[in-house]
Amino acid sequence: MSQFTEALVVSPLADGKTWVVLRPFGYDRGVEGSGDRIHVEIGFMTDFASVPRPLWVVLPRWGKYGNAAVIHDWLYWSQERLSRAEADGVFLEAMTVLGVSAWQKYPMYRAVRLLGWLAWWRNQWDRVDGFDRVLRRQLVKSIESSARPSLMRRAWRHMRRPSTPPES
Image (cartoon, rainbow, N blue to C red; front, side):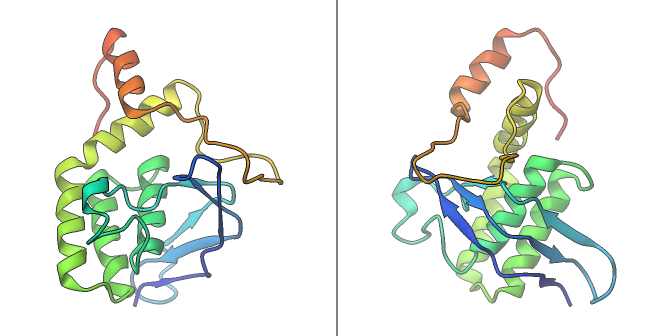
């Protein structure tokens, strides 16, 4: 059965919405010993679940699904082994492993299937523009903010640039 490999240890940045992974963290897919491990790099910046503010009363950015949200953020950032649909499937599977109730996990899964292309493209645009969501230094200070441009700013830059749309 799938399982998380370590406890998630994070520290907040000063912007109030970005957290940095401080210790090794990962997720084993499938049966134990399958070798299908998702490893989140130390220094990875996450915003947990990207839930719109009006819904925070019902679905806060951090909840029982927090570990699954970090794995999902990593898969959307790295885009190395899995397609967007597969990454969304891992998110649903990981929420099931965590025992997230159906009334929370299925709407969250449907939301990433419907709107996740925005985050998928944004991550591609960030990489093209040289932004790295992994801090490559040892010391992270909570007085720092993420230097990541907003989605609107990133989209505006790429709409003005003649190119083909990112693959999803």
